Image (cartoon, rainbow, N blue to C red):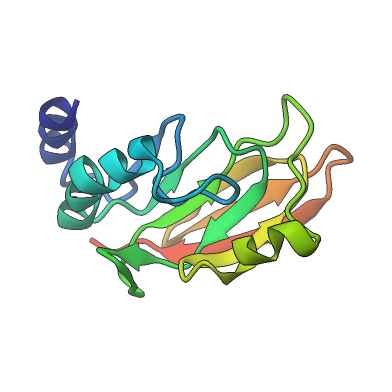
Length: 150
């Protein structure tokens, strides 16, 4: 998969807005970040996202509302990729608040984490991309923007 992914990112390197979507999160909101699938994604795909300047990645599987800080490598970087997710609309969200889940909010990469069903809407404008999490009632419950850079 990494070889194919690199070919695609290279082929579309001149496209200013590049996004990815996949199932198991590299930066999970609920599951442990050291699970083998998340670790494999960070080992094989994240370096490609960093190299080719991927703007955002839509992650799934954990069934929570999650938004990371911009991440490059293993640190927060304004030029990094934001990871949005984690796929919480088709089924009920997992519980992330409470004494047993307090450790979830301490993950260095998280900017937002909530037990909330949602979908992400993406609006591309002339100089920026707007990401909005929309709940079942059509309300915007989270938002962020990224500048479009040539």
